[in-house]
Length: 101
Image 1 (cartoon, helix red, strand yellow):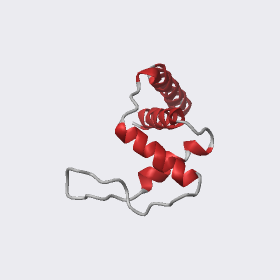
Image 2 (spheres, one colour; image 1 turned 120 degrees about the vertical axis):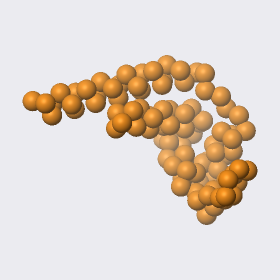
Image 3 (spheres, rainbow, N blue to C red; image 1 turned 45 degrees about the vertical axis):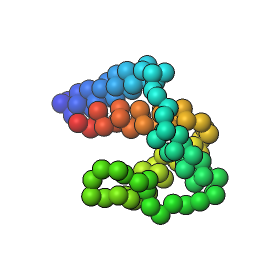
Image 4 (tube, one colour; image 1 turned 90 degrees about the vertical axis):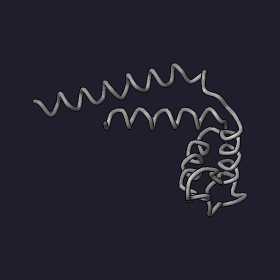
């Protein structure tokens, strides 16, 4: 019985977190970094290039991290080819993490 309540609570937390995040979606900014990730994601989806290094970071010891984030940002572009797809994808991932923690 307790296990069922925990799952139900997790589902409620997920949908509340998702609703809050999607309600604020129109306030998301689309700046230089987001445009860069969108363009690289489109290149991956359209098979123009497959990066082996991530985008350059200005602070910290690792200047060129791996490309995992870029490939992750290309996944929603397989469904809908617009920056909104990336925004919604990130918000769904955020709602999942709210449920996990």
